[in-house]
Image (cartoon, rainbow, N blue to C red; front, side):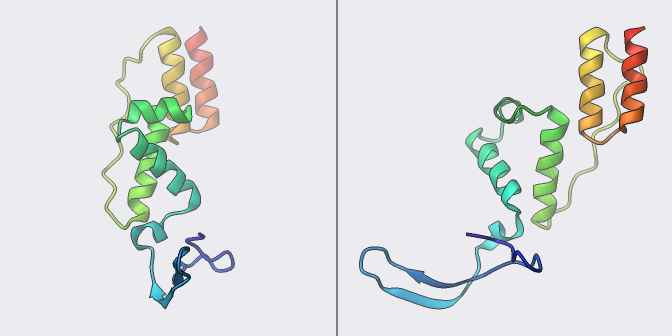
Length: 129
C-alpha cells in the first residue's frame, strides 16, 4: 500500500478495510500511523534493521553497506518520524589507520557524506604513497 501520494507526496489514508473471509467492509478515514511518514526505501531499511534486531553490524552485512551509511539511513528514518537526530559522530582521529583500513575509512567517509569525491580521491592517492 502506498504511504505517499504519487502526485503531491503527501501522506495517504485508508478509506475501506474489507475482511477476506466474510466480505464485511468497514469504511472511515484511517491512517497507517508512523509508517505513513516513511518512504518505501525507508520501510525496506526498517524491515532489515528489525530483522537484524537493531544490530548495525548485521545490517551492514545484509545490505552490503558501510557503518556510516547504515547510521545515515537510520538517522533519515528517525528524522522522518519527527524525532531529533543526534549529532554526527566526531571526525576520525588525526592519526589515521594504515593500509587497507585507511582506504576503507576514506570510502566510509565518502559514503557518509563527510567528504566529497575530490577529497576522497586526494586522500586515496596520498594513502598509496
